[in-house]
Image (tube, rainbow, N blue to C red; front, side, top):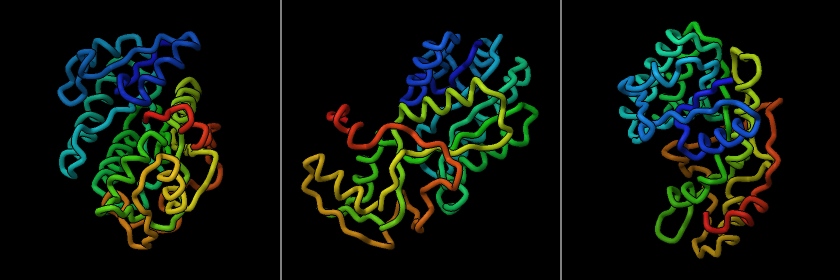
Length: 250
């Protein structure tokens, strides 16, 4: 089966390519570096020829609210139109657990707009909502830092390894379209402030984690369950301590 991975040179995309290839699929990376640009439409018709499934794991180069909205709306419209012309039978997109709970967040608003375009299209689809990746937890700490203090809200947090995300997305992609969404999260649930207190200690980081109920998460104030999935979510297998032991430099 030919499966085109939009954003196939990125973190999740590269992991997907490897897994799909191991299972005998013709997995093709589509990204600006491979001559495919979803914003302009360049290369889409050529790369989608003969494709059965398209997986979109691309991301906006800018997280500024207007720019990220333009990216997801324009690229998704172009991609869906090209898929319809090519006869693609399954569109898979990766989104974020909690998008609908934080509508004041510009990035999440853009992901909601992207999902609506997919849901309203004629192409059978599956949406995979994932929690935050282990690979990005240092970035969360940096974003939350003021001086030598890291301000974190005492809410639920269930991060996941990128490898587990890729495995879940790959399974969905080779199955029947859900025409709906599924959620995937890490195998452990933490209090977010406690997670970061332990994580910084494991990194040898001298910053102090301060529990702050009003601390912002990428610009949004979060509540108890803003960042965790509902019942029935798929759980990954990799625990953070085990991932960290194998990714000491990350």
